[in-house]
Length: 260
Image 1 (cartoon, helix red, strand yellow):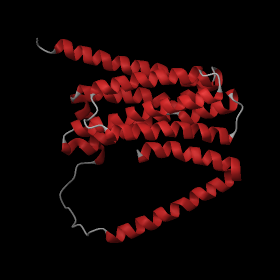
Image 2 (cartoon, rainbow, N blue to C red):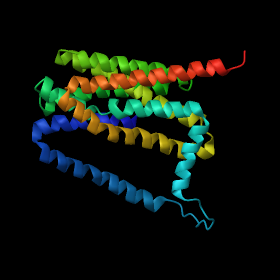
Image 3 (cartoon, rainbow, N blue to C red):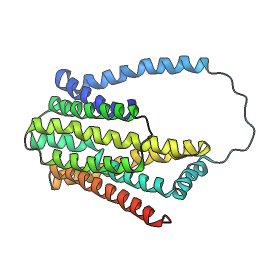
Image 4 (cartoon, rainbow, N blue to C red):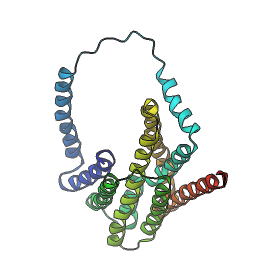
């Protein structure tokens, strides 16, 4: 909740501050915000217990990282979830690109309107994290398929919204579905992975989510420039449909393989 929501709340606050005091001062506030963190880390380092040096030969970090990929490949439902995460995060999580394009080119707005839109999406994001945390049972594979379909529908509705206020309200649904998917994916991977591989698997999951977002950003920007900002959001809907379809196909294949 703290990680994903911060990616939405931070730009929202920054957008409002840029409109009020200017971009340069927002950079300075960002600099000052690191001071408490550095002090806390410095004090925390002094309180760490001393650990004796381990002289045993450890395997290289690259090999450990590849072990995560091998483990995921051996558990095909995890591999499918990883592909679904790549599809949705590559285009759907580039909200900073398509929301800025919508703000400037469609609604002729400025930094304050952009910050407001990010805030609306953050409401859905925080709600999604709380819903996931309040569930008594761990997210199932089928639940993630439904959430991917929900994400596809919400992207489509946001893309065709004609008024600014309808667009803003529907962003709550988009943030909700996106957060439900990302937190459910992380929860499922942690719960179903053996303890000794859990760190390596989660490293792969996190690298896929963040890496696919970075890889998809230029494509989203190109679509927004040449086809329009609405098409950039609509492509997120397409990837959501593909992700949900892939999940349903895998479930059907598993059902057919089970002995009757």
